[in-house]
Image (cartoon, rainbow, N blue to C red; front, side, top):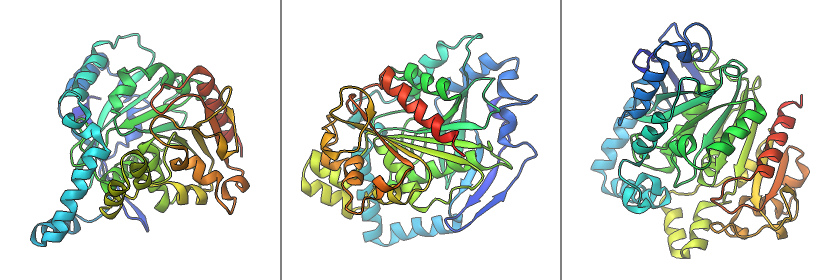
Length: 395
């Protein structure tokens, strides 16, 4: 089935309830296994190369609404009519360009069409006998088109295990497919027998919209909804949320209001992330900029949601360790070249006066030697994979 033939599916989500509105006889999962699986198409290689080479997002194949369209329209009108509201949103978006430099070629100093170049590079290297299978698709959430991709093997697409990746602030999902980290990423997937789904935040690459805390979290919520939906979506049985840096912050914001499914096993991984975004900005730049980020709505953080989280959580933290190993002493945390020890999530949890993290048996802290943007080494990948499997195999 080509991308142009993907059946559109709509889903409405609110924070208090989830209501499904199927509009097709073909659930998204029919693309992953069975006679209509995308990789069984005789033109799979040609259509995949064509899809990944497209500059714009592909036709929408899954739609999520977190709020009524009329509410969005009213808010847009008010932001134009009422000057303070419009100015607030404008400044929030402006700050977002710096917080998420991947959304700005000027700030990131990357080519304007970096994402497309990376996709074309990836597509040109695809071969017919490639063990991994890939599918690019578009998911729409409250009017924003989110560019996303799936990867997995024929042998794993039906096993119900999925890893949801949320990028760091300078990262594109194309980097995972064609960048330096692809070997380690595949090693994790192979070790835990998982498929993967990845996406670009609004305003990054081919994803439409502008970067804001709200739109980034909504994009994550939409992908999670696709994974969880057993009627029209993928119908995952096990979900591993993997977030790096600001990607872990987005994950943490999602978890503040998320109602996780009782019939799905979850493991959340947070890699080298901050406890509080404004505090991190203050430590890297100045207290003034941290204060500005806070008053203009960039209050992203994972501490409270992490403390309340009842499902397993693994925190990867740069630390003073001889090798990759578990640790429980905040004094071992070291500067990872971006995030100072005191600004890290691991430090906040381990120094919690109520000892929530230490008492909670579902939380593991893994000390690693890699810096903030360094590729995970073989030992880290091995221990991380073992921990994920251990949690998933625990009743």
